Image (tube, rainbow, N blue to C red):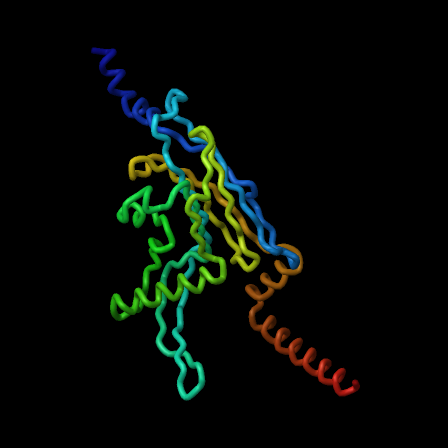
Amino acid sequence: MKRIAALALFAPTLLGAAKPVLVPDVSQRDIQIVYSFTGAELLLFGAIVYPGGRTPDRPADIAVVVKGPVEPIRVREKQKVAGIWVNADSASFRSAPSFYAVATSRPLEQLVDERTAAIYELGIRNLQLSPADADTPDKANRFENGLVDLRQRNNLYDQQPGAVRITDGVLYRARIRIPARVPVGTYTAETFLIQDGRVIAAAVRDINIQKSGFEQYVARAAADHGFIYGIVAVALSIGLGWAAGALFRRF
């Protein structure tokens, strides 16, 4: 009886040990943005630790997601009125990721169904953007598509099917490009182990992207002393404009 009770007590631990474990890492945990910053390339790599060290007959797939800080945003729609482009309709979103990139070992639709993709926000079209004031579903979809398209054109949203390389069923690696005009903040690099349409393991690492040097000083001044920063910016613009005008008049 004592032996049976002991096995029952440790059963959850034994069952947990029977699951594979992800050991992920990234090439850079801290990225500093300076005046000469032209972007960065992150290498995401790691290992899949299977119970007993035995690789299954059908190796699992990997999906890697790098996500930037979530922020509220208002999207405006422009229309041409009397030959002039003006702001027309608009919609707000409560939680749009400032950056999103996903890389997978195979096309996403071959890995998971729509429900699982929506739960884990796998894929650009499965992001939970949380529209705040859209009157109808059609309007919400129109502005969601506009926001996604705009950020894709600015290289802030990206999807790379087949970009994850898996070696011997246990080692994986992927490269994700961070553009030059990326927002600062704490990013997350999430790794998902997928088998038979299910996420069977996940792990996350944080990445800090911050401004340094003169850029950090300007950003801090704008945040801490907004009124003074605005006056100085206007005065500097006026001074540069006057100096340029005087220079052109002379020549």
